[in-house]
Image (cartoon, helix red, strand yellow):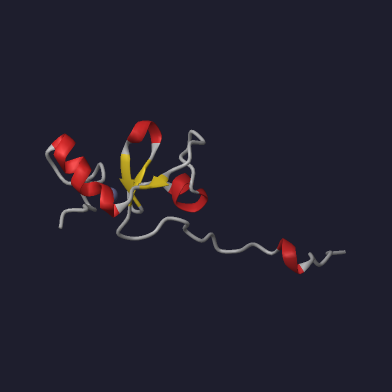
Length: 83
Ligand SMILES: [Zn+2]
């Protein structure tokens, strides 16, 4: 006989926790965006290593550019804070 599972046991579609247009700091300070983050970071906010991914504030781009000579950009170059 098949038991009916309580409603709270139903599978839900995973919801991404990262936002479009933002750049995050991942493992070892690697810069990632929503598209480059990988499934673990995208859905849990933590990289596969368990390290939390942190949103980089857009306001830091000017500081970043002064130090590194370029705009803050994700590792694959698909998202950038270039003005
Ligand atoms: Zn990217």
